[in-house]
Image 1: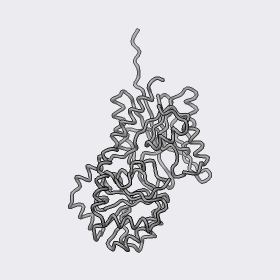
Image 2 (image 1 turned 120 degrees about the horizontal axis):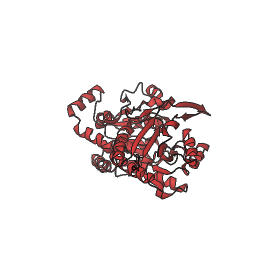
Image 3 (image 1 turned 90 degrees about the horizontal axis):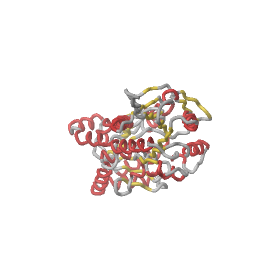
Image 4 (image 1 turned 60 degrees about the vertical axis):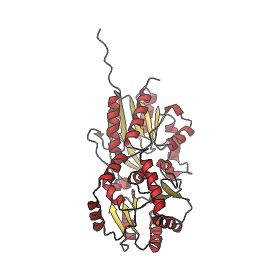
Length: 385
């Protein structure tokens, strides 16, 4: 009798869409899993509504694109991802931990009936809804306890999952990250002459500019930022503010600054395209929700100033107040925020301390490290129980 040929295990990651910052990570994860004898497939769709206004998704040439169906229910968007046939014969299916993704529940039922293992990848809970245990959060917690494995964004996310009674031994902390090494390379190699050309194009008059970067959504606390910016300008007459991003609040923002020429709306920029804009600025100002832009701050050595708020993404744990960032009290007023920014703009020694902290922190988080952690978790999850 001939020997039985064992097929390489196959894992499928199903994504609602592929954000730009996931592109490099997915390619690295695919390569690492190949070296472990595991085949990776990525199935992805598209976003709609306000999420689509951010214009921050990409195509994956080696992935499988599907057409999501989006439903409105009680003011919320629900997604149906038609991926059941694409995941039927796989060893494990990894999905994002989002209550709105209807296929997750079908996959869990199929797992219970003996189908492919299901793993969650996510925050652990919706930090933007902290203090309000809504039905969607209860549903998410119910599902979170029933998956085969957990890929937690950060240690903060893992703590949430463990608090649900989920076994510590089946949680992989991936340290969510973008391609920080590419940002560092781009910052170090960007020509000074091109930087000065961009300064002229933006009509930046001085060298006390700051930047806000991120999707323009209500969670970013943009009115607070603009009020603070006016107070900063009063104290620092040549202060200017660059805003990178797009989203549902964009038109409202444009209307607010239409007569404020020192606020420059640049539009959405991602990856290395952000580098020259950060290079022209001294501080990153995000008084609202902070997520992966904390890592952009590290890689580009532009310290972040934010508030201590419950709605931050799990990446907030990467920030150390006074070391690589400044984190003000959640009760701080726009005046308080402005005063701290002004203080830092006038204190080059303290700015340099924070920049050095950013440089060190940038070495701790990367797409390479995240892909290695994720691959290790997948191999462990596939091992016989």
